[in-house]
Image (cartoon, rainbow, N blue to C red; front, side):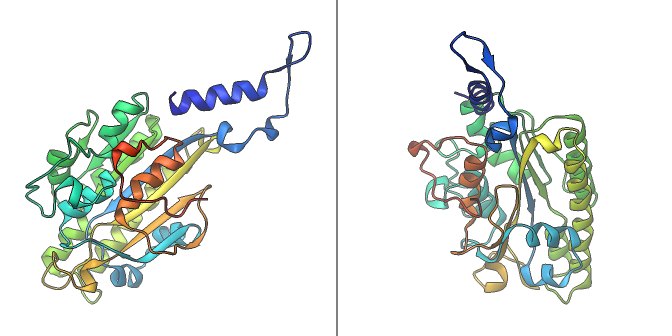
Length: 306
């Protein structure tokens, strides 16, 4: 039974109690559990190449607000090697490279047929859900998300960050997404151009610019006409950090990443034990009340939710 249909049927069953004459009894809606009153939705924001100590140095009021009011870890460790193809595969499939097969950006050995991304998987198990991934790296669009029909891709140009944000704002305003994934590449591009380091002002400024885009995205989410009847989970993460020379290695500066979860069902505060990239898929599935089939072989666990 599908997620929305299940919620609707449960709500109907709760509200439509019958007396001995067969007439419906009106019940106080406040007595109905919250999970049956609100549509469960998820927004995953993936910021490519954000080094944690540079994030902490940058002026990022929107990211700070998501962390302060939510669950967070700034000690999460990316798997080795720290290549985007490897880490975003972990994020989007919920399994490690031992299963999905990818450890670098050439995507050699990929096994997404057996271990697909969450969007492809939901197209089979929850086809009525409106899922919208918006990405700015063709490694994701051409490899990981091959089974997704409504994928939006922005070519790797300097304006792709604002384009992703603009499309996200449009979709949140004009469409009715159930699950969105935004991949924003600009911080990674700045790192490769100038160095991944908190002392590199161009790198830090790009983090601050992206934070402003997140602010516009969150504003559009909260301005949705049915926002009060919706239960949004917002997840924010990065794939890797870096050094002045780049990334792909095993240094703490490259491996240390962050995870932020914000929403009504989140347990506020620092997450212990430290979460992993593969925890994102099971966390999304739990929030959206989608049962996990053991045959999927997910490697992660729920992180940050009640």
